[in-house]
Amino acid sequence: MIILGIDPGSRITGFGLIDNHANRMEYIHSGSIKVSGDSLPQRLGYIFAEIEAVIRQYRPEQMGIENVFMARNADSALKLGQARGAAICAGHQAGLEISEYAAREIKQAIVGTGAASKEQVQHMVKRLLGIRQALQADEADGLAIAICHAQFYATRQKTGLDSSQLKRRRSRRR
Image (cartoon, rainbow, N blue to C red; front, side, top):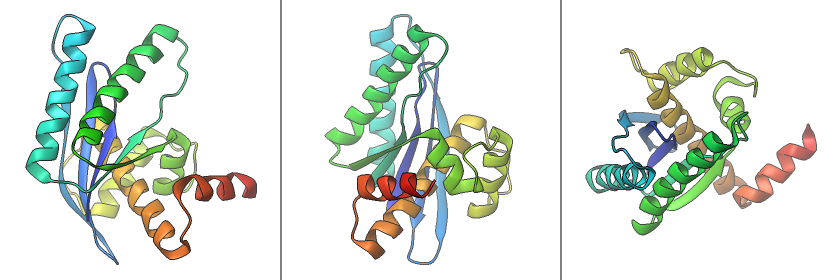
């Protein structure tokens, strides 16, 4: 099953694609969309079109995307949320199953701690997928989200619980 991970951003949106097999994950492709356009509607349209093109080319079946966190700047958080919405709309229009993950959940799934640094996440993504070349931070985050989704999906398959039930169980254990 091919999974698309999206790290949304109003200036740079990272993405990563993996093929999730029963006993391993395989790197397919990753990159970043450097958003162009002067106005916010132009930038959102660009994100939508570029994610749509990635979906058409690689035909993922599922998509994971990072939840918006509240930044110090409310305007930045709002723009991030709108960029995220454009990516979600592209996935929804393509008929993908879409799951959302908090940054702490992603770091926990990849590194083992929700307080991991970006460098730790990049290092583990490369190790988990056997990638030798350097990864740009946003594309590494997109791959991390895809890996996180693969892990949640595998657990869901084994337990029969949906994502929200799994997240509630995890939060109770903390």
